[in-house]
Image (cartoon, rainbow, N blue to C red; front, side, top):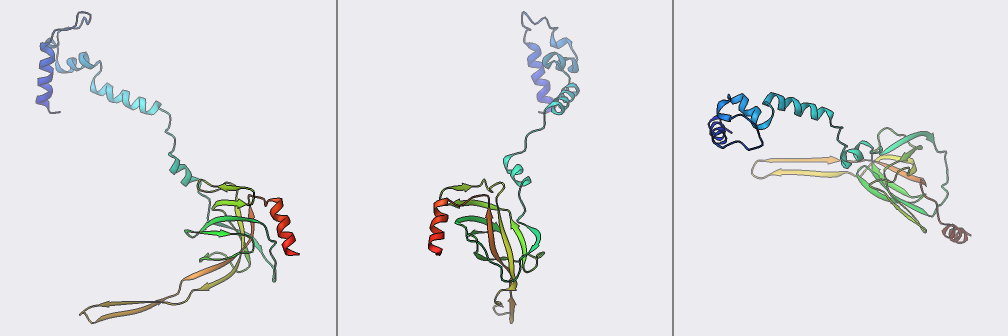
Length: 214
């Protein structure tokens, strides 16, 4: 608000009679600073000081759910510092999990093989734990995460680090005598699922699988 509009508003308020129970002096007899004190009960400096004190006294606002979830985001994978031997075998288990690796979701069960984006700091035959588990399931129950299931993990072993087939990228600019041909081979990692932690297989499913294995 401009100074002229403020002055006009104060003049209109000064022309109005005070309330019977107010007991305040006439506004016209006060200086502008005193008029502000009489109207609002505090000076602008006091108001700013009170606002700052109230802001300091207020408890810290709770983090929004999205920020809290981001702060507790589990790592994509954790190396276990162990390796699998040559010719190892995986015990079948009647459970499955949906796990997120490299921005892609995979539905896996023990002894499955998946191909993911390259995991750079792991070697062949090294064990690792995939911790971003979105869903767990068995014949008896299903556990859905929000977005991840706490305490769940998928154990896997690195089987291969390799380059995918070559992809040709051709660029041409018309009437510019400009052509460019390049190739790209995407680095990938092959994982074998060893176990799913966080859920147990239903006894009936285990018995049926054992009978089918015989």
